[in-house]
Amino acid sequence: MCYTQSCVAAVRFFKTEAGNEPAREYLRSLEKADRQVCGAMLRAVQDYGVDAPGVEKRQLEDKLWELKPDLHRLMYAMIAGADDGCPSRMQEGGP
Image (tube, rainbow, N blue to C red):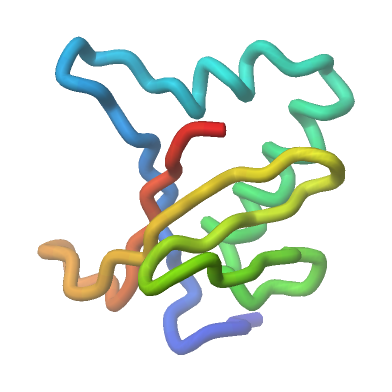
C-alpha cells in the first residue's frame, strides 16, 4: 500500500568529507531495543514513505524534518527531484 505519492523514499545517511556517517554511528551505538525501534521507523519510511502509519514526524523548518522514534530524534532533509526519478529523497542527519 502506498501512503504518499511515491512509495519509495530512499534513506541516505549524511557523510562527512572524511567519510564518517555520524547518524549511522549514533544508531549503532544504541542499545539493541532502541536500535530496532529506530531501524523499524527508517524501514517504514523507505518502504512506504514518510506518511506511513506509525511514522511520527514534524517539520522543524523549510526542508528540515525530524523523525521521532521513541525517545530518539533523527533529523532529515527532504530533497526533491533526485536524478534517479524518485520525486523525494531523504537524507539522514546526525543526532
